[in-house]
Picture (cartoon, rainbow, N blue to C red):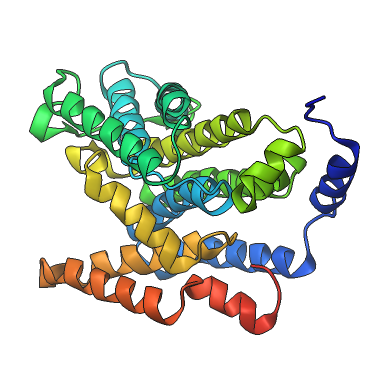
Length: 327
């Protein structure tokens, strides 16, 4: 009889998922936290906040691709729509920033549930094309809808007061709020990956027929990870709208979906810290090489080709092989 509680499989999965955080992971998290605490005093806070938002976006995408084995070409839909809703909620509805972010996140979750329930019925390239098609629909909706501002987007979004008390107009104060959101998201993803649920996802990724034969309802797991990934991408997009006080068509355009794929693959698909490194590299290139115009895009393409040909595991994946420990 098919069941989600096969005793042998679940015993193995539980032992792996409940093992606790390895010491080297704990050390990396601690070092990352210390560095990010000092970062706004060493670097431009807005730049670091941009890195954090896109790092969370990339980690959310990696949860779907790296651990769920599902390649989506439409993750800009959740990132961008959450950005629009968060900006609209803060500017027009007058919500405080945390409520505006929650509103954007909820919309991304609902959108992920609607799209995911249809997309998971297909596999491989067909799955990817379905997600891209839906993302393009969201893009044209954003272009035509009245509340999005069309090509102008939603500008001058007020940062407001956190919980009605803490003034976020200061970039330094806002930074620590964004840092808290980032770490909450990363730790949640880490917990998901190392839970029994995460181990089942890896089993489905490696051998879906085998997972089905063990009695796991594969489509339920796929839909769950799809919605989780969309929701966390929504958190990143909604937070980004508050940071930059702007939501625009760039957030929902197909190139945004391409960028998050690049960040994940460059950093290391299926690793915990890879997407963070990949996002930092890409955002740094875009920021400091902006004066080169379209050459930045060409540079990204060259880096992507070199990465795929030279180290297919990504930057962090190669480091993990060198030190022989999972990162």
